[in-house]
Length: 379
Image (cartoon, rainbow, N blue to C red):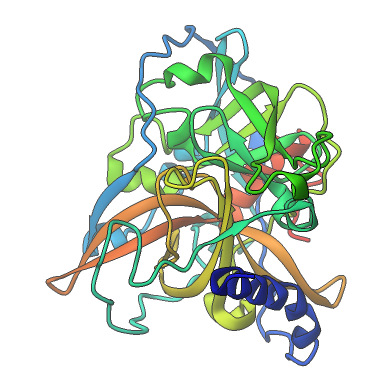
């Protein structure tokens, strides 16, 4: 076994042993997050999509203090939480929404519950685009890992991105993987989701063929949903809404990862996030990484997890305290979007960025999954 293989095995072993150490941690002390109710109106038919956009796998934005500290008004949020539905035949609809709140509860109208900007540490020197210092990514290989949870929840998107299974028939990914803000990309016309099949499952003995890469089983997408906050919005604003939900034509049989409103990083076990994706510089490989949260705003998670184009749309998860189960559980708290230059106090800072699942976004995505309001509450 090479030194690199030993290192990878050690890190993955720690990944599996972590639940045993988490039992020693105390649950976070915070108030339960209230999830508002999203009330959709009747869909309005739109013209068919032209599918004229080019796929953009390396999504980069710039932001200053004004956009970082931006506060949304209720009317703005309800407008941006409206959503467009694209069907496999190109037919589109627009659904507007209202937000129902309990009397006197205004907090959930804003995608907050995140702390104000905090500076955790000075930025490390940038060595290579989206790779910070030594490359900390690990290839996931072999049946024992590829088919095991949580790695088995990562799927490929036919436009070149990654997605995460969030139900028996739904995949969460980045909006820019299917739509450029003006129109759907070429590949969204016949969008597909790819499930990795290890060589041995496919009838090939992986041990006899070194470095044999897994095959991919492709499944067609039935419909795609994109928030209006992404469509026709300024780039630095729309990054807050860089997420989309894909509904498969038929259910899969693999485990999926549950969603959660993103807590403050202080309430994540180890202040750490994780995600697995299909980085373009390692074709055919599932790549896993983890890192601490560096900074956070009301809508974005700033970090230095090493990533390359193709990882966009990966489900960013952390270990979140589940009140009902009374234990730490892996849950999707964000979607890896891309790269952002952030100018704060006259200093340019360089980050990889994930979109936070706020209470309102949780309510919206949950409605997309379940198709009703009754099942949409924070677990």
